Length: 138
Image (cartoon, rainbow, N blue to C red; front, side):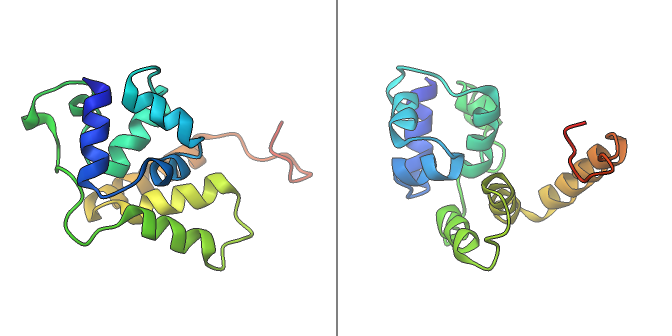
């Protein structure tokens, strides 16, 4: 069920397997394995996929259509174009993970952005301060 739903969601969003793989930061072949059922995405990648496709993760896993949260991307929304624009903009000083985070944030709908910022703030607030040398490895 997951493989079929991933393929349907990707096609509804008019994305290629390569584009989805790039957004996730994985090889195209790894994403192809998700769609063919040879492997399953990690929990983190499952959440990323639900964010990219704007569907609830439970729907991807086989839940009813009523659990599909907001459905596929609205007409005119293009997650990959946003991701590419961020990747090619003046944010070259950001790490790959930071650029992906910005792409996911920009692809979110209004209320999701506020919740994401609040969660990020809480995590920063509750984390240990970085080491004096600027290296946060501890």
